[in-house]
Length: 394
Ligand code: RFL
Ligand code: PHB
Image (cartoon, rainbow, N blue to C red; front, side, top):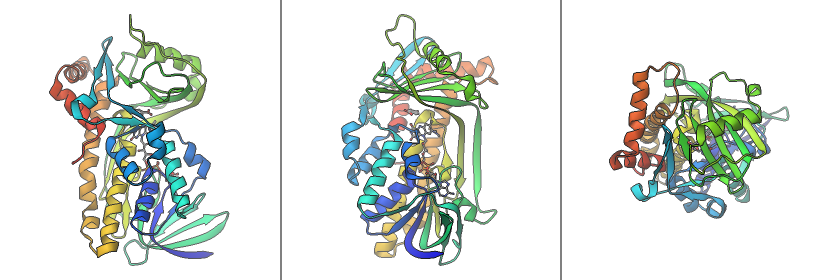
């Protein structure tokens, strides 16, 4: 068995854990990142693609933005489509801010490369991980690599291990409260080698269900379809996926035709909303999907994970630089303000754009009325846009 010590033990090499480790390094604080998967797996997991301006600014200000600046695509508008019409929502005109399309796995690659260039330690394939002693002064994380047992002692543990993580289990029973909602549908997503026919995202409400036209680069499209929550991927050969995308995204008399191409990746994501609080317990701090999940309709998940890392970075800096615990103590309350705003926005976008089998015609008309309002009232459009590009102060 091997034993080592660090200042902050970070569990999970997703956006939250890697960003935190990078920010701590900039403050001169040592951390070790423990990740159950191998490096190739985390670098190729296809997920989010929309970065808020605040996320882009943080990446750039902290020295991670070089490739993002070169390869990321700034977007100034999105489209909302319903009842056979497409409406452009000019986010930048309405808010002065923009989003950037850049794959989450690219952010993860950039962060891993920077941590390794800075001699940071990321342990991949850390198995059977457990967290103990967060109530006392010497928390310890135990894990195995290649069958060899390791112990990592730390001043603090940061649980950034996503929705299936184990770090929450270190909190005693009865401390955590969970707020949760599941939706009666899932998203089937594809990544395709196909030049996108649009340069701004289309969020479409259609009688067959929601569809989203997104992209990754001038050669790669990312598209999603609302499907049943227990949908079997085997029932969705590529031809069926494309046929349904044509039906839901194309409009009569409109030049936009979904471009087809080889499907590089295909997967189904269940939709849920979840908040677990408090986001801290003594020497354990939880961040990202480990404690809050949103349906992807608002494009908020990765941005929230990175916003948590930013708060924790500042709070640990105040503690190590000045023995000031105020920001650490305030972490949950501060983070939850942004988290709940994003929860509401994501739930609202989801409710407005999807087909709910259980809904009666009255509820359907309410959803359509909100879409109509968002595309005709500047005030409502601005509210949607400022949430979408990301609020500065929440
Ligand atoms: P992650 O990325 O899940 O990383 C957690 C890491 O912890 C590891 N892990 C463990 N390591 C050690 N021991 C254990 N026992 C462990 N258990 C787990 C995992 O292997 C993993 O590497 O969480 P993090 O860092 O909190 O980041 C959250 C984001 O990944 C997530 O919110 C977004 O992907 C959500 N999301 C979107 N977010 C956006 O901001 N914009 C979007 O456009 C957007 N689109 C999406 C999305 C998520 C999607 N899926 C597939 C869920 C679109 C989709 C389809
Ligand atoms: C994506 O490009 O993967 C994407 C874009 C917008 C969303 C969700 C996912 O709301």
